[in-house]
Length: 272
Image (spheres, rainbow, N blue to C red):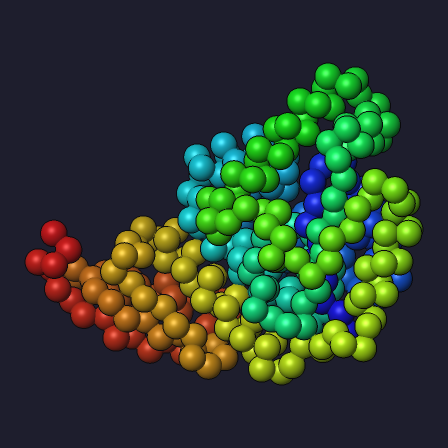
């Protein structure tokens, strides 16, 4: 089984390369559309999460204006949700950072010079050079802004990648060959049951965080942990018994939560 994250910029042929890698390894491809469906499957209404692609023009502005902490929690939940299967090809959305501590994941960066990317965008989209340059500049700004906001790192930090593939001098099939060979290398580990369990618990923790934020609970006073599968431990402070009951109800209604262990104290004066 292979778990691969692919990071790219607009015009690098990354989508085409990722599709070929998934086909050759018989893996599920988690592009923007597939990640949206996964998010829908874990119980989130997508009405306010259109244009999932962090490279899309205007994405970062929409993110900042639309409860960004909730979006980021849900996005992380989705990445862990698909990764816990132990196999698949995940495009973008910080997978190289979120799964950096899991040795079973292969993190790939697809790279090309800006001039090559502009030419590719012109050919694929049938647009002028001026339009292609503007779109790529906007896309790069969105991608960099999203990653800095979400993870406080540069999205193209080479320390986050195991393999850098240049699409400058090779076709998409040739680039895919290199990634497939790396994924099939005997030194690549298969995700252990311990790693898969950790991903499952991280996904649940992020879903609960998003639910609490969406219900206007202040994250400064709430600490979450998922010590076992389906078990959520909540610690912290709240200002009333009514809020405590509401908190327990919100956590308990999250898909995947089987048990809520609540260690939250009611201290009105502290939160005034």
